[in-house]
Image (tube, rainbow, N blue to C red; front, side, top):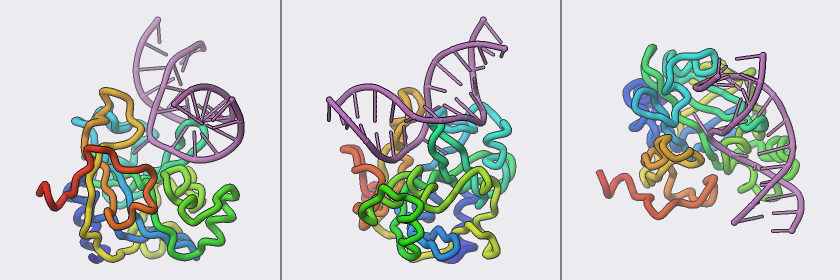
Length: 205
DNA sequence: CCTACGATTCACT
DNA sequence: GTGAATCGTAGGC
């Protein structure tokens, strides 16, 4: 999978892109991690999406081109990293929920003093953001520009894609949609265990 | 203007 | 399992 192919998938369909983004690397300086869990959000038909009720100052980049960092602050505590999808005007994004740390673990541990094991570093969107120093300052960054300090690089394609319902959404916000994408061979690194409704994407395809 | 609450994490019972 | 932390934003008045 090349950088161009990932971008193409992002531009085409956020749901397809969910499985394509798995396996790609998130990089910042010496820190590198392999993305193992994402969730798709779109707009008109997705009540759980920040873009559902139209364009605002916060969600602005979701309406822009694909491959851009949409970063927002939640619960007054945590930053969350998303990768935008779809062409200009059609809002969508993938929330990066978990990753497997590959390099620069010492720096990640330094940013997350409470973490005891490598599994505690990136196993959740808030954890991942703090381990990578992701804040509002990264809002709008082009993640597919090799010159960007924070960026996404191609990795090995994930073949065992598991689909599940999204996490943390209130009732009526699309909590039943199977738009959570997980690397089935990397369950050790994900944010939460799979639900009873999880299924292998290949089987159901 | 004012209030409720969220795409979460962590400590504690 | 439950609740606190902590604040920008959306949505209602």
